[in-house]
Image (tube, rainbow, N blue to C red):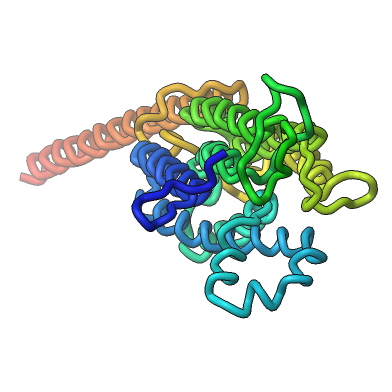
Length: 330
């Protein structure tokens, strides 16, 4: 396709531009939703900034691991000049490495800052497939992460140094972009209401792992690495599927003393409706406790009034008895 936009003598890489657009939209979505919670939008912005650094380093590290044979043969070029170093960092990132690296920074940041981890995760996670989906459009323009050979109209010809020339390839990048944006819409709407901590990230890991495992069969680029007969990404997907199921089903809030709910309205006055059965139970129990407390307070007030009345009657009786005694003495 078109890896660069030419602006005079300056070449703007489409891959980087799409990543930037996706990041801006993802941050905006998370900060917009933060206003409906007790989380400060500034904490969301700072956490995403640090998380992005971890994601870049993690994505690059996993790419180096999976493509070490080709990279090691060109170390002199990549690190012998500024142009080579710029090319080294201009492409070549593995998403799963970025996800792992990002979480490795995000979780400690929330713990150190003493932020509500469940609420922060429910805020941030829906933005991940949005950024990823728009980034995959950048992959399409750059010509990387291409699909298997396929005749037109399903196959397209790439004008890129990273894709084979003269061969029509299936644009798997656009398919993954569409699926990720659909996943973003689902998670964004799902997380609008309070959910149990771990439910949103569990569903994301489960859905994307299944999606990625299937899409890997349509990929044709060899620089992906293979383990035990499957690609590196498929192997990681097989690990993430049970993790996603566990996060979505196990009540971690009880095990770790976390709030029962997380997400917009969970800890604010706006939490008027709780959609899940478990959350409705929590709300009903809370209302019953409040009713019992009100009844106890009413009983205590009634008892206090009776004691006060008895106390007032006792001095009156004592006064009349004293008056009678005085009259008798006289």
